[in-house]
Image (cartoon, rainbow, N blue to C red; front, side, top):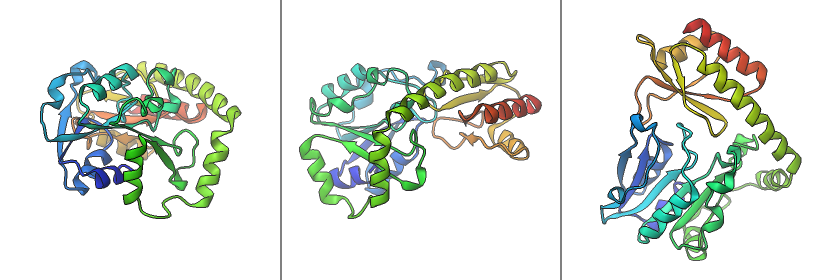
Length: 272
């Protein structure tokens, strides 16, 4: 769907706030749109603060925005996103809420219920993260009726198979799984963040989703090197050195089961 949106709406230029999910820029490029990268600063913990200066280019007709952001985990409140959309009605705002189900108080941040109040807001959701079936490749978007109609004209046929659709419907109705998963994530995320914070040479950022973004503070250690050393112990991390706006001092880890989290922490303690 990220590729479908610029293919159907044909923006001349698109704005991306970096570091973020790399497919946003790739989707714009695939439709021959120029990508305008706005780099969020490390000294501000990669947090987004609204500024009209981001949108001064009159040819910018689309913005990709990730909330919570991947890989940094930073969140932007709903009021800020809606303010941007209303201040710049000529720009289509595409908000990726793939990880919003993991967030505490998602209603404070999600704009999925607001697409009818503005004509320039598209929300994309994933079902492969929270519900744990990535191989089915299923997600959905919510947009104003005229925008949705335009997207349907360009959407390839049979993009979702019957099995994925059925699994999605069952998953969305499983209230017990949703509440159990949120309780589990809240507990394990806090545990893992606390343990990582006690490892010398590592600076984990406050997590909001099912992953933790970490900076390496030790001289001589880089994220590619750490990744290679961890793989020797059967542990995989996401080296973030190839994200625009980041360097080889950043990586991301998933929040997993207590046993796996203990294994990650103990291995990092040995290496660091």
